[in-house]
Image 1 (cartoon, rainbow, N blue to C red):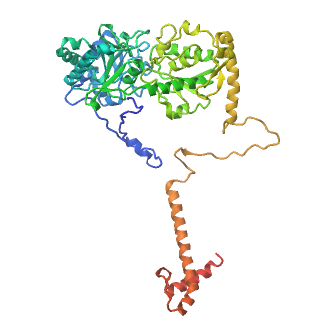
Image 2: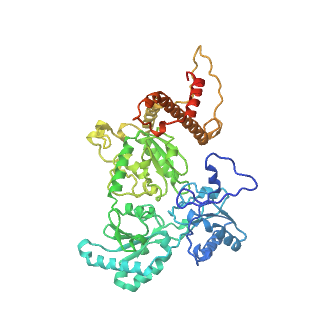
Image 3: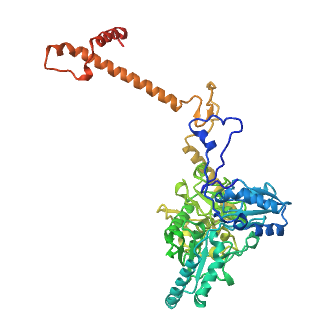
Length: 574
């Protein structure tokens, strides 16, 4: 059980039950007995009931009237899975509990597919979460709990608020909005009390973001103009404006931090955590990241075949986004293919050489993929929308939430105003300037250049030709089914047998070592024989010249010389 897509990792020691493990080559058999102990996320002295919120979990299960409950743990909490399971099973004897195994996608997402295998009525998600609303199954979230210096953080925020009050008239800064990593969520109330004790004036300028009720059915974010990350809200329904200061309490390598930076790219964003000793430091500039995303948008324009990769099957509206992407790609005169490969990696996506760009439909925490190691770029649904829809221009606004591109309801969706823009001279001529190649390329189709059906047919015709061109460049083209006259069939030969790391007819490292030793012995004998031949030829001359002394390595006894003569007679011409 547990998530095994990287991270800390958790392994269970394999013990042989009466039988020896299978004989594997090399040291592969050690994998069966490898054991890696992860550091416990729960601090010593804290009970399972308090850390994993057993009472609140019990109330939620009773409220949902669940009969089967699935428990989803990340690797960092896996060592407590058995104890949590037993504690809940004792409290709720009429409920069946199941610990989910490896997640289909990221550990931040609710694995609703795995829960459906046991017909679970409720999912208990432990650890960090993207808070994406599930399709149908109710979800209860339990976060990590890491203690932080509450008074120090409150004092830091109060000082920041005082500084902003002094420069308010100059820069029109109004408020400070603070986001917390999920592992610090349990300290928000204590920090709020400390801030209140600093003074009413300063406290009124600081707003602390909270997670909505810990069930997916009460998601606070509404699809529309809101920039807030999923599941987060500020008191009184407030949201940061472009003049406000934003603070994030958490690690730099955090998906939530990246999401906040992209959503509020016009704001000043600071960060504090253990590495900064909880002093505020300005967050890294995202201009370089946005420049990279702009480059990938232009790569989408150049692509003729685009692959849509499914990165979640639990988040609500993911099917609507896939249909919208397929329609958008077809209207642009391009071809799309749909792929479901589970957790993506370089070997999986490298199997599809014809695909020029992949668009990844996943939760906000996973949609931003660093594709530098991949053979082709991986983009987000928003980038496809901006690249392929005529009339769209990037204004600097960004979102990693795929629901923001849904027609009519998404914050960054295409509107009638985009489509009704007048056609430029270049579009009328059917050309555009390619930022990637620096040359003139074909422009995106417009509504006046043909219907969407005609574009799809033209795209399919172009795709067939393009696919055949790809086939000609392949080194291996599969089995040749053509029939050749006057040609005898090939003989059937025995293939390889064994396992891939070392087939039965391949030489092992031990065999190779033996061959190297034999070769070394032969070389040594040849060298010794050559030396003796030289000595035999120069010895008569050396005896006549008293001043000449042979090196020690060329001196041999008379007995050895007699043996050499016998060996020479046996060797003959060899």
